[in-house]
Amino acid sequence: MNRCHWFIAGLGTLASLMAFAHVEAEIQNHPLMDGFQAKLAQLKTRGVNAPHPFVVGADAYAAFLNVMSECAQARLARRTK
Image 1 (cartoon, rainbow, N blue to C red):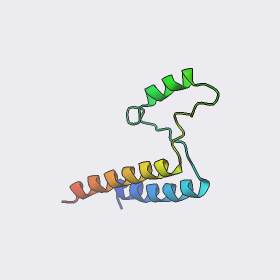
Image 2: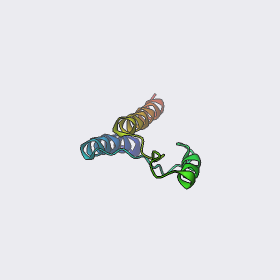
Image 3: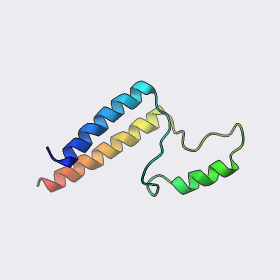
Image 4: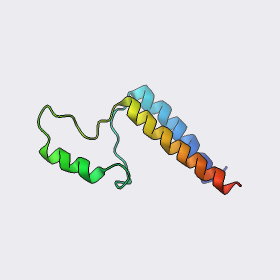
């Protein structure tokens, strides 16, 4: 199994664990991918009752992990042609 296979398998495990834990927040390690800077700016001016910009909800977080998995699977498919 190469790294891409491991990554895809790991995303599946992560998705299961995050669903079990009801994770609703997404903070990426690639800030260009999710509007990180804009979300940080929102935090600076966020009121007490305003929604937190990094809390996206469990469904959106699950969809985010699914997109990551699909992208990795497409990348793997291109490599194996």
